[in-house]
Length: 382
Image 1 (cartoon, rainbow, N blue to C red):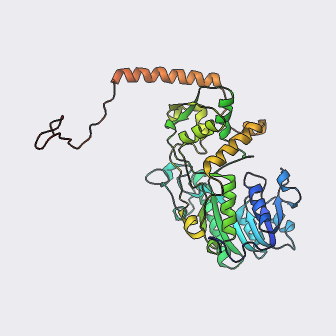
Image 2: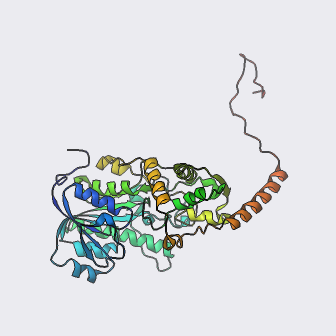
Image 3: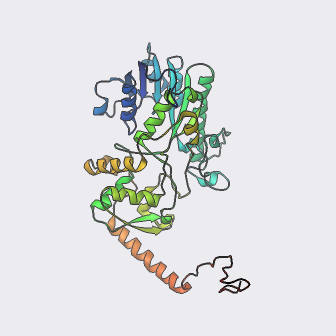
Protein backbone atom coordinates (compact mmCIF):
# COMPACT_ATOMS: atom_id res chain seq x y z
CA UNK A 1 0.00 0.00 0.00
CA UNK A 2 1.44 3.40 -0.97
CA UNK A 3 2.04 6.04 1.71
CA UNK A 4 -1.13 7.88 2.62
CA UNK A 5 -3.53 5.34 1.06
CA UNK A 6 -6.29 3.72 3.06
CA UNK A 7 -8.36 0.64 2.43
CA UNK A 8 -10.84 2.48 0.20
CA UNK A 9 -8.22 3.86 -2.19
CA UNK A 10 -8.75 2.88 -5.81
CA UNK A 11 -12.20 1.39 -5.26
CA UNK A 12 -15.30 2.37 -7.22
CA UNK A 13 -17.88 4.44 -5.40
CA UNK A 14 -19.92 7.62 -5.50
CA UNK A 15 -18.44 11.04 -4.80
CA UNK A 16 -20.03 14.44 -4.33
CA UNK A 17 -18.02 17.61 -4.99
CA UNK A 18 -19.57 20.76 -3.53
CA UNK A 19 -18.26 23.68 -5.57
CA UNK A 20 -15.92 22.52 -8.29
CA UNK A 21 -15.97 25.42 -10.77
CA UNK A 22 -12.90 27.18 -9.37
CA UNK A 23 -9.19 26.51 -9.94
CA UNK A 24 -8.99 23.24 -7.99
CA UNK A 25 -12.34 21.72 -9.06
CA UNK A 26 -11.30 20.16 -12.39
CA UNK A 27 -8.20 18.62 -10.79
CA UNK A 28 -10.28 17.11 -7.97
CA UNK A 29 -12.80 15.73 -10.48
CA UNK A 30 -10.05 14.22 -12.62
CA UNK A 31 -8.51 12.56 -9.58
CA UNK A 32 -11.84 11.14 -8.46
CA UNK A 33 -12.62 9.80 -11.93
CA UNK A 34 -9.15 8.25 -12.13
CA UNK A 35 -9.94 6.44 -8.86
CA UNK A 36 -13.13 5.01 -10.32
CA UNK A 37 -15.74 7.22 -8.69
CA UNK A 38 -19.07 8.25 -10.16
CA UNK A 39 -18.87 12.00 -9.56
CA UNK A 40 -21.72 14.41 -8.88
CA UNK A 41 -21.08 18.15 -8.67
CA UNK A 42 -23.27 20.42 -6.53
CA UNK A 43 -22.94 24.14 -7.27
CA UNK A 44 -25.09 27.19 -7.83
CA UNK A 45 -25.04 26.89 -11.61
CA UNK A 46 -23.50 30.33 -12.06
CA UNK A 47 -20.46 28.94 -13.89
CA UNK A 48 -20.16 25.83 -16.03
CA UNK A 49 -16.79 24.39 -17.01
CA UNK A 50 -16.18 22.11 -20.01
CA UNK A 51 -14.06 19.90 -17.74
CA UNK A 52 -17.23 19.07 -15.78
CA UNK A 53 -19.32 18.12 -18.83
CA UNK A 54 -20.68 14.60 -18.69
CA UNK A 55 -21.05 14.63 -14.90
CA UNK A 56 -24.27 14.82 -12.96
CA UNK A 57 -24.87 18.39 -11.76
CA UNK A 58 -27.05 19.40 -8.84
CA UNK A 59 -27.83 23.11 -8.90
CA UNK A 60 -28.40 24.38 -5.36
CA UNK A 61 -26.97 27.13 -3.17
CA UNK A 62 -24.66 25.52 -0.59
CA UNK A 63 -24.91 28.57 1.64
CA UNK A 64 -28.39 27.58 2.85
CA UNK A 65 -29.41 24.48 4.81
CA UNK A 66 -32.91 24.35 3.32
CA UNK A 67 -31.63 24.37 -0.26
CA UNK A 68 -29.14 21.64 0.55
CA UNK A 69 -31.76 19.50 2.23
CA UNK A 70 -34.01 19.63 -0.81
CA UNK A 71 -31.17 18.98 -3.27
CA UNK A 72 -29.76 15.99 -1.36
CA UNK A 73 -33.03 14.37 -0.32
CA UNK A 74 -32.73 10.60 -0.68
CA UNK A 75 -29.07 10.79 -1.78
CA UNK A 76 -25.96 9.31 -0.18
CA UNK A 77 -22.30 9.14 -1.21
CA UNK A 78 -19.16 7.26 -0.33
CA UNK A 79 -17.13 10.48 -0.36
CA UNK A 80 -17.98 14.16 -0.19
CA UNK A 81 -15.50 16.97 -0.88
CA UNK A 82 -16.69 20.40 0.23
CA UNK A 83 -14.86 23.33 -1.36
CA UNK A 84 -17.60 25.98 -1.31
CA UNK A 85 -20.59 27.22 0.69
CA UNK A 86 -21.28 27.62 4.41
CA UNK A 87 -19.37 24.69 5.79
CA UNK A 88 -21.52 24.09 8.86
CA UNK A 89 -24.69 23.89 6.77
CA UNK A 90 -23.10 21.60 4.20
CA UNK A 91 -21.65 19.33 6.89
CA UNK A 92 -25.02 19.10 8.64
CA UNK A 93 -26.76 18.30 5.34
CA UNK A 94 -24.26 15.51 4.63
CA UNK A 95 -24.21 14.03 8.14
CA UNK A 96 -25.27 10.40 7.76
CA UNK A 97 -25.27 10.74 3.96
CA UNK A 98 -21.57 10.08 3.28
CA UNK A 99 -18.94 7.74 4.59
CA UNK A 100 -16.08 10.22 4.24
CA UNK A 101 -16.07 14.04 4.11
CA UNK A 102 -13.13 16.33 3.29
CA UNK A 103 -13.83 20.00 4.00
CA UNK A 104 -11.74 22.84 2.59
CA UNK A 105 -11.16 25.99 4.66
CA UNK A 106 -8.35 28.54 4.45
CA UNK A 107 -5.50 30.36 6.14
CA UNK A 108 -7.70 33.25 7.38
CA UNK A 109 -8.50 30.85 10.25
CA UNK A 110 -5.16 31.85 11.78
CA UNK A 111 -5.23 34.81 14.20
CA UNK A 112 -2.98 37.50 12.75
CA UNK A 113 -3.49 36.49 9.13
CA UNK A 114 -5.62 39.51 8.23
CA UNK A 115 -4.55 41.70 11.14
CA UNK A 116 -1.06 41.11 12.56
CA UNK A 117 -2.03 43.07 15.68
CA UNK A 118 -4.40 40.28 16.76
CA UNK A 119 -1.47 38.35 18.20
CA UNK A 120 1.72 39.08 20.12
CA UNK A 121 4.29 39.59 18.83
CA UNK A 122 2.38 40.99 15.84
CA UNK A 123 1.98 38.63 12.90
CA UNK A 124 1.62 34.91 12.39
CA UNK A 125 4.38 32.61 13.54
CA UNK A 126 6.66 31.51 10.72
CA UNK A 127 5.79 27.97 9.57
CA UNK A 128 2.60 28.02 11.63
CA UNK A 129 1.31 24.55 12.46
CA UNK A 130 -2.31 23.46 12.34
CA UNK A 131 -2.85 23.79 16.10
CA UNK A 132 -1.94 27.50 16.03
CA UNK A 133 -5.55 28.26 15.04
CA UNK A 134 -7.19 26.82 18.14
CA UNK A 135 -10.49 27.74 19.80
CA UNK A 136 -11.08 31.32 20.86
CA UNK A 137 -13.95 32.99 22.72
CA UNK A 138 -16.43 35.28 20.99
CA UNK A 139 -15.94 38.98 21.71
CA UNK A 140 -18.77 41.45 21.04
CA UNK A 141 -16.16 44.12 20.24
CA UNK A 142 -13.98 41.98 17.97
CA UNK A 143 -13.12 43.47 14.55
CA UNK A 144 -14.53 41.91 11.40
CA UNK A 145 -11.27 40.13 10.51
CA UNK A 146 -11.10 38.51 13.94
CA UNK A 147 -14.76 37.44 13.74
CA UNK A 148 -14.22 35.91 10.30
CA UNK A 149 -11.20 33.97 11.57
CA UNK A 150 -13.08 32.73 14.64
CA UNK A 151 -16.08 31.57 12.57
CA UNK A 152 -13.82 29.53 10.29
CA UNK A 153 -12.27 27.87 13.35
CA UNK A 154 -15.74 27.11 14.71
CA UNK A 155 -16.79 25.57 11.39
CA UNK A 156 -13.72 23.34 11.40
CA UNK A 157 -14.54 22.18 14.93
CA UNK A 158 -18.13 21.56 13.86
CA UNK A 159 -16.95 19.19 11.12
CA UNK A 160 -14.65 17.35 13.51
CA UNK A 161 -17.45 17.20 16.08
CA UNK A 162 -19.65 15.41 13.54
CA UNK A 163 -16.72 13.11 12.85
CA UNK A 164 -16.45 12.27 16.55
CA UNK A 165 -20.22 11.67 16.68
CA UNK A 166 -19.94 9.11 13.86
CA UNK A 167 -21.81 11.13 11.20
CA UNK A 168 -18.90 10.55 8.78
CA UNK A 169 -15.13 10.32 8.82
CA UNK A 170 -14.14 13.97 8.57
CA UNK A 171 -10.97 15.77 7.54
CA UNK A 172 -10.20 19.48 7.08
CA UNK A 173 -7.72 20.82 4.51
CA UNK A 174 -6.71 24.49 4.75
CA UNK A 175 -6.02 26.16 1.41
CA UNK A 176 -3.56 29.08 1.20
CA UNK A 177 -3.45 31.43 -1.81
CA UNK A 178 -4.28 29.23 -4.80
CA UNK A 179 -2.85 29.96 -8.23
CA UNK A 180 -3.87 28.44 -11.53
CA UNK A 181 -6.36 28.95 -14.36
CA UNK A 182 -9.75 30.52 -13.56
CA UNK A 183 -8.65 32.20 -10.34
CA UNK A 184 -11.14 34.90 -9.29
CA UNK A 185 -8.23 37.19 -8.40
CA UNK A 186 -5.24 36.23 -10.59
CA UNK A 187 -2.36 38.15 -9.01
CA UNK A 188 -0.02 36.76 -11.65
CA UNK A 189 -1.79 39.01 -14.16
CA UNK A 190 -0.21 42.09 -12.56
CA UNK A 191 3.16 40.75 -13.65
CA UNK A 192 2.15 39.10 -16.93
CA UNK A 193 0.45 42.19 -18.31
CA UNK A 194 3.37 44.46 -17.41
CA UNK A 195 5.74 42.18 -19.27
CA UNK A 196 3.40 42.10 -22.28
CA UNK A 197 3.05 45.90 -22.11
CA UNK A 198 6.86 46.28 -22.08
CA UNK A 199 6.90 48.04 -18.72
CA UNK A 200 10.41 48.42 -17.25
CA UNK A 201 9.46 47.91 -13.61
CA UNK A 202 6.82 46.95 -11.07
CA UNK A 203 6.25 48.63 -7.71
CA UNK A 204 6.90 46.14 -4.91
CA UNK A 205 6.05 46.84 -1.25
CA UNK A 206 8.92 46.47 1.24
CA UNK A 207 11.38 45.02 -1.30
CA UNK A 208 9.17 41.97 -1.86
CA UNK A 209 10.71 40.16 1.09
CA UNK A 210 7.37 38.89 2.42
CA UNK A 211 6.74 35.14 2.52
CA UNK A 212 3.16 34.36 1.47
CA UNK A 213 2.06 30.72 1.39
CA UNK A 214 0.97 29.63 -2.09
CA UNK A 215 -0.26 26.39 -3.57
CA UNK A 216 -0.80 25.44 -7.19
CA UNK A 217 -4.37 24.35 -7.89
CA UNK A 218 -3.14 20.95 -9.04
CA UNK A 219 -1.23 20.48 -5.76
CA UNK A 220 -4.13 21.70 -3.60
CA UNK A 221 -6.35 19.12 -5.29
CA UNK A 222 -3.68 16.50 -4.63
CA UNK A 223 -3.77 17.38 -0.92
CA UNK A 224 -7.54 16.85 -0.91
CA UNK A 225 -7.37 13.57 -2.80
CA UNK A 226 -4.53 12.27 -0.63
CA UNK A 227 -6.44 13.11 2.55
CA UNK A 228 -9.64 11.55 1.17
CA UNK A 229 -7.93 8.19 0.76
CA UNK A 230 -5.77 8.08 3.88
CA UNK A 231 -7.00 6.38 7.04
CA UNK A 232 -4.60 8.56 9.03
CA UNK A 233 -6.40 11.72 7.83
CA UNK A 234 -9.67 10.97 9.64
CA UNK A 235 -10.35 13.51 12.39
CA UNK A 236 -7.36 15.68 11.40
CA UNK A 237 -6.67 19.17 10.01
CA UNK A 238 -3.94 19.72 7.42
CA UNK A 239 -2.35 22.82 5.93
CA UNK A 240 -1.93 22.69 2.14
CA UNK A 241 0.95 24.40 0.34
CA UNK A 242 3.54 23.83 -2.36
CA UNK A 243 6.54 22.17 -0.76
CA UNK A 244 8.79 24.89 -2.23
CA UNK A 245 7.84 28.44 -1.25
CA UNK A 246 9.21 31.76 -2.53
CA UNK A 247 9.30 35.36 -1.36
CA UNK A 248 7.15 37.87 -3.24
CA UNK A 249 10.25 39.18 -5.04
CA UNK A 250 11.23 35.67 -6.16
CA UNK A 251 7.65 34.94 -7.26
CA UNK A 252 7.61 38.12 -9.38
CA UNK A 253 10.87 37.18 -11.08
CA UNK A 254 9.70 33.62 -11.71
CA UNK A 255 6.39 34.87 -13.13
CA UNK A 256 8.08 37.36 -15.45
CA UNK A 257 10.61 34.78 -16.61
CA UNK A 258 7.82 32.31 -17.41
CA UNK A 259 6.61 34.68 -20.13
CA UNK A 260 10.11 35.56 -21.32
CA UNK A 261 10.43 38.90 -19.57
CA UNK A 262 12.15 40.70 -16.72
CA UNK A 263 11.00 43.57 -14.52
CA UNK A 264 12.93 45.87 -12.22
CA UNK A 265 11.54 45.65 -8.71
CA UNK A 266 11.07 49.19 -7.35
CA UNK A 267 10.73 48.95 -3.59
CA UNK A 268 8.44 51.36 -1.75
CA UNK A 269 7.04 51.19 1.79
CA UNK A 270 3.71 49.36 1.81
CA UNK A 271 1.80 52.54 2.70
CA UNK A 272 3.17 54.31 -0.40
CA UNK A 273 3.18 51.38 -2.82
CA UNK A 274 -0.21 52.09 -4.43
CA UNK A 275 -0.98 49.35 -6.98
CA UNK A 276 1.82 47.21 -5.59
CA UNK A 277 -0.45 46.51 -2.61
CA UNK A 278 -2.64 44.45 -4.93
CA UNK A 279 0.08 41.79 -5.02
CA UNK A 280 -0.94 40.88 -1.46
CA UNK A 281 -4.06 39.00 -0.37
CA UNK A 282 -3.96 40.92 2.92
CA UNK A 283 -3.49 44.65 3.77
CA UNK A 284 0.02 44.26 5.21
CA UNK A 285 3.44 42.76 4.48
CA UNK A 286 3.78 40.52 7.55
CA UNK A 287 4.70 36.95 6.71
CA UNK A 288 2.01 34.29 6.28
CA UNK A 289 3.94 31.03 5.97
CA UNK A 290 2.52 27.75 7.26
CA UNK A 291 3.98 24.29 7.76
CA UNK A 292 2.90 21.20 5.80
CA UNK A 293 5.08 18.85 7.81
CA UNK A 294 2.02 17.14 9.30
CA UNK A 295 0.73 16.12 5.84
CA UNK A 296 4.18 14.92 4.84
CA UNK A 297 4.52 12.76 7.95
CA UNK A 298 0.98 11.39 8.32
CA UNK A 299 -0.05 11.18 4.67
CA UNK A 300 3.26 10.80 2.86
CA UNK A 301 2.30 13.88 0.84
CA UNK A 302 4.49 15.10 -2.01
CA UNK A 303 3.68 17.64 -4.73
CA UNK A 304 1.96 16.45 -7.88
CA UNK A 305 3.79 19.19 -9.83
CA UNK A 306 6.84 21.23 -8.72
CA UNK A 307 5.96 24.82 -7.90
CA UNK A 308 8.02 26.46 -10.66
CA UNK A 309 6.52 24.16 -13.28
CA UNK A 310 2.99 24.82 -12.00
CA UNK A 311 3.59 28.59 -11.99
CA UNK A 312 4.96 28.45 -15.55
CA UNK A 313 1.86 26.55 -16.68
CA UNK A 314 -0.35 29.14 -14.96
CA UNK A 315 1.45 32.08 -16.59
CA UNK A 316 1.25 30.54 -20.04
CA UNK A 317 -2.47 29.84 -19.58
CA UNK A 318 -3.18 33.47 -18.68
CA UNK A 319 -1.07 34.70 -21.58
CA UNK A 320 -3.34 32.69 -23.88
CA UNK A 321 -6.53 33.37 -21.88
CA UNK A 322 -6.32 36.95 -20.52
CA UNK A 323 -8.82 37.65 -17.72
CA UNK A 324 -11.87 39.58 -18.85
CA UNK A 325 -13.17 42.82 -17.36
CA UNK A 326 -15.35 41.02 -14.81
CA UNK A 327 -12.11 39.71 -13.29
CA UNK A 328 -9.85 42.73 -13.72
CA UNK A 329 -12.48 45.04 -12.21
CA UNK A 330 -11.97 43.18 -8.91
CA UNK A 331 -8.26 43.91 -8.87
CA UNK A 332 -6.64 46.63 -6.81
CA UNK A 333 -4.14 46.99 -9.65
CA UNK A 334 -5.71 49.24 -12.32
CA UNK A 335 -2.56 49.32 -14.48
CA UNK A 336 -2.43 53.14 -14.34
CA UNK A 337 1.12 53.40 -15.61
CA UNK A 338 1.15 57.22 -15.72
CA UNK A 339 0.31 57.37 -12.02
CA UNK A 340 2.96 54.75 -11.25
CA UNK A 341 5.59 56.78 -13.09
CA UNK A 342 4.70 59.88 -11.09
CA UNK A 343 4.89 57.99 -7.79
CA UNK A 344 8.22 56.34 -8.63
CA UNK A 345 9.75 59.63 -9.84
CA UNK A 346 8.68 61.40 -6.63
CA UNK A 347 9.94 58.59 -4.44
CA UNK A 348 13.31 58.41 -6.17
CA UNK A 349 13.74 62.17 -5.84
CA UNK A 350 12.93 62.01 -2.12
CA UNK A 351 15.24 59.08 -1.42
CA UNK A 352 18.07 60.70 -3.37
CA UNK A 353 17.92 63.66 -0.99
CA UNK A 354 17.89 61.41 2.05
CA UNK A 355 20.86 59.41 0.80
CA UNK A 356 22.84 62.57 0.09
CA UNK A 357 22.13 63.85 3.60
CA UNK A 358 23.44 60.77 5.40
CA UNK A 359 26.37 59.71 3.22
CA UNK A 360 27.36 56.16 2.26
CA UNK A 361 26.58 53.37 4.70
CA UNK A 362 29.53 51.61 6.30
CA UNK A 363 29.64 47.83 6.38
CA UNK A 364 30.19 46.25 9.78
CA UNK A 365 33.62 44.67 10.22
CA UNK A 366 33.86 40.94 10.90
CA UNK A 367 33.96 40.68 14.71
CA UNK A 368 36.77 38.11 14.94
CA UNK A 369 40.50 38.89 14.54
CA UNK A 370 42.42 37.64 11.49
CA UNK A 371 46.16 37.72 12.44
CA UNK A 372 48.73 37.03 9.77
CA UNK A 373 51.40 35.69 12.16
CA UNK A 374 51.63 34.21 15.65
CA UNK A 375 51.48 36.87 18.35
CA UNK A 376 50.90 39.71 15.86
CA UNK A 377 47.69 41.78 15.86
CA UNK A 378 45.67 41.89 12.66
CA UNK A 379 45.14 44.95 10.45
CA UNK A 380 42.47 46.25 12.88
CA UNK A 381 44.88 45.87 15.84
CA UNK A 382 42.90 42.95 17.32
